Amino acid sequence: MSEGDTFAYFVPDGESEQIRIDTYLIKDDDLCASVDSGYIVYNLKTKKINNFGTERLYNTFASAHNLPPIKQFRDFDHQYNNYWNGWRFWTLP
Image 1 (cartoon, rainbow, N blue to C red):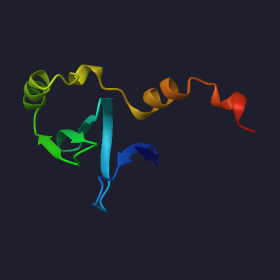
Image 2: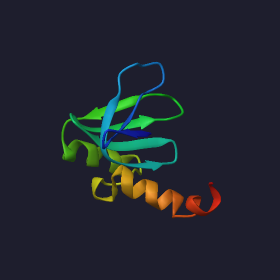
Image 3: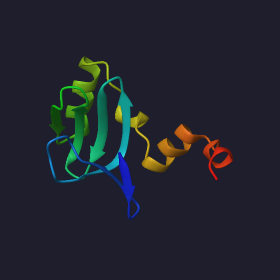
């Protein structure tokens, strides 16, 4: 996951095109995200991507596969701040 020009994105393995991410959550090996075209689940281990055009379709899949509901997704800044929690500013020069 990367951020540039105020939006988050990632590039799936073996691809060259960026996928813009609005909000997301990673659970186990799955990146669950809202994207321009709807919602995706990208398995980080198998590199398989599932696309969903509507919130209902994603939530049905998520419920069946023990994945987080959309309301738990967070934007990049929120995730970044939770991960670093301010400590990096004390350890980096």
